[in-house]
Every structure is written in structure tokens, then in C-alpha cells.
Amino acid sequence: MNKKYLLNPFNTLYQDNILLSKRPEIQELNQYAIDLEDRIPGELDLNYLIFEFANNQLAFVRNGLLLAKIKFLKLYKNYGDGTFAGFCKQQLRKQRWQINDTIRASRVVLELMYAGFETLPANISQAVALGKLTGEKLIEVWRNITKTLAADKITAKTIKNIIKPPLESDRKNATIQVSVEVHEDIHREAASRGLSVREFMRIILEFFINSEDSHLLKSEVNTEEYKEKQIIWQEDLIKIAEEKDNFLIMSQKTESFA
Image (tube, rainbow, N blue to C red; front, side, top):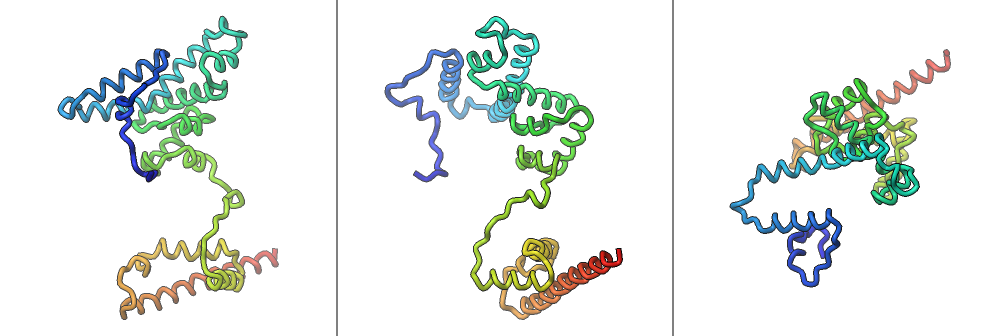
């Protein structure tokens, strides 16, 4: 089966030999699915469905608030061994750190909500990534994130990278498949300029990104205009490399006089 093909979840309601747990939350979910399936298109309000989706996205915050009551009022004392860890494992079927993360996430979201933000962390992972921040620092960081990234681009990883940008030495290397000849050319050109392969490739990449006239943006090739552009591009690239060479030479001279 194609992994991109989606099966309709409502089809499972019509399968034979359905086995259903009697746990109240599972019974309620079953009834929710049945009620929703019974509605025909004319009975479905799209705005309500959108609201319900957004509302459900914040369910982890509601869970965090409930769990905070259990923890901070010590309502778990009369269960099991009387410890919070034991209660989490036996009654909530979660590890204590998972419950603490949910509480932590709810605190982050409430702080941001009461600071006037419309865009809030979309899940526990995003909120926990902000968990060490509070007050003005939390607000400042989240404002920066929401101004820099679209809501669908915000992830726990991007949040962590903005809070603590990774060092160059921490970045993982990736492999790009090229021919042996191209591989040798890259290493030779980088070495001739006293650059690492990473620095050399970064210069080339930045040139293409920053150049409005990059030939990669043109669909027509092998025309006279294209050939002229290619010559200009090559000359510009040489100038960039020479400027880098001069910078390195000046830096070395400065260090020798220091």
C-alpha cells in the first residue's frame, strides 16, 4: 500500500466483530465517532469543525491544569504507596517526568496566553522547549519566534535552536552524492584558497541565494544571454573567492604582528 494513501477512519465503525473496552474515556470516544459519522454534509458546520480542531489542539493544556491540581494539592496521597511517582505509574499510566512535562507545558501556555499571544505552542514538546523560561524572558523569546516563523514552521527543534543556537562544531555533517571528478574539484579549489570544504561550499551557496541574477533562476539556457550571464557569474564568483583570500592574508598578517 502507498504510504501516502489515507484510509477513512470512519470505515472502522462498520467492521465485523468490534471489540470495545468498557473504560469510560474509550466509550466516550466511540460515541463521539458515531455521532460525527451520522452527520451528513448539510449538517456539518465547517466553522465549528475548525473551532473544534483548534480547541482539541489545546487539550494538553487542560490536562496539565488537572494534573497540577493533583500534584500541588497532593491528592495522590491516599493511593498506592502515597508517592507522586507511584500514582503517575499506577493511576495515570505515565512516567512522572511525562506528567511533570505536561504540567510544565500548561504553565508556559498560560503565561503566553495571558501575555496576549494568539499563536501558542501547539503541543507539549514545543511548550517544554520553553519550559526553562518565565516572565519577560519567555515573552521576549516567544515574540521573536512568532515574528520570525510562520505557525506551521514552529517546532520544538526550531524553538531550541532559537533559544540556544547550535555551535558550528555541533552541526552534523551530511553527505551529498557527486561524481569523483566534482568531489576532487571541490577539494582542490577549497585547498587552493586556504578554505575548508564547508567554508568554500558556504560561499558558493550564499552567492546563489543572494544573487538576484543567478543563472539557476533562469529557465532558458544555452542562449547568448545565458552565456553572458554565466561569464559574469563566474567573474563574480572569482571576486568573492579573491576577497576571501585577501581577508585571510590580512588576518594572518595581523596575527603575526600581534
